Image (tube, rainbow, N blue to C red; front, top):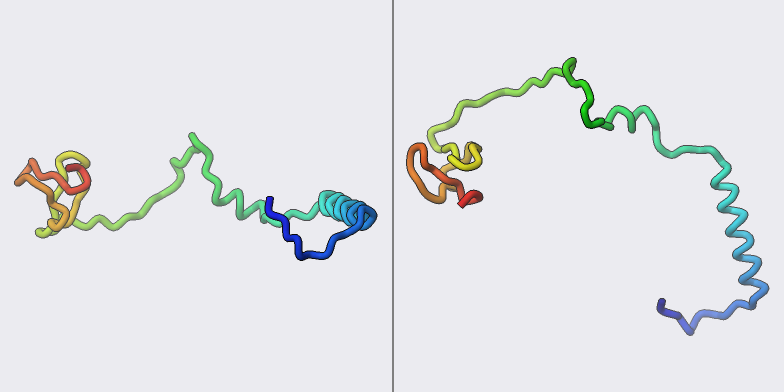
Length: 98
């Protein structure tokens, strides 16, 4: 740990008083009982593994593959032709899978 030798030095008594005040402040903070996090907001954004999502609906607009796009035969993602690494027809491969 770096020490700044230009700062004024404190006596042992001053250090003892400061540390005592810090401990009292920490104890008061711990006993305050105030919570900074809104529990309802935290619970809404929390997703548990294995949670039943059968009642949830997902609405997604599906756009058909365009003429300037291809489907990679390795990752099966639709990419723009600028991402084409090699292949033709059903054997096309994107730059990520190459």
